[in-house]
Length: 281
Ligand SMILES: [Zn+2]
Image 1: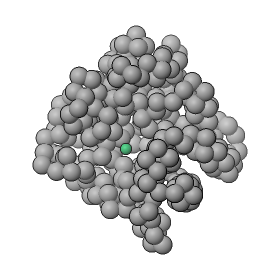
Image 2: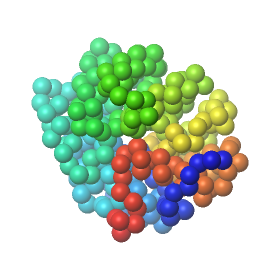
Image 3: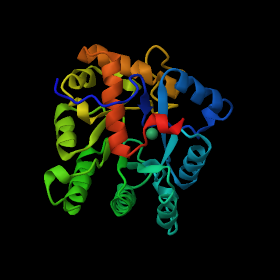
Image 4: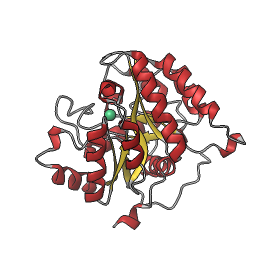
């Protein structure tokens, strides 16, 4: 394989998506972060789901050197959006540990907010990401066609002078789509985030697709406290379980863990413009 292996500690993993401000972590967050660290999950990205949790994510990033924040309003919380939300998010973006706009997107499965409202706040937040030069963390459920149209138009509006000048624009988090979706996403320059759901027996299609995924577009995540991998399904998920997601991918691709750690940590570092792990210690 002709992928240049960079100079990173070989077993450092990056959990690119965990909601550590939620209630299940209220009593033992310190232990959760220490346990992740002890298993090599060295950096964590915490995305907000509304303004309040975005502020909480930033506060966590101030407290823990290895935690980074993303700020945004999730489509399921679209009705929390008001005339001040965009300005508040814009102010949060100036924080040095805010590395992305997210979690944003469309969710027609839960349908907690009208699709028109979801689309309007998604577009507002995509424009904020472009303005700030930040990548986006995208959530999608039963809404791929509309998301594809909106993201396609957004990328076109960014006017890259040359295809190779395209920066890393974002990630489709907890990807469970089909081969056509995977191909469209990666050709557009977006990463695919893989979570614990890939370990479920019902996810054979995703497991087959993983065998064809371009490794340079792959990042790992837990989506803690959700999507707990096998064999802990049913319990609270936490970042230390990222290694179980990695082991499943390595089994499907027949590559060593060290290689996957190196590749996915490099991808996440590039996508979110993260510092080198050793510089945080
Ligand atoms: Zn999430």
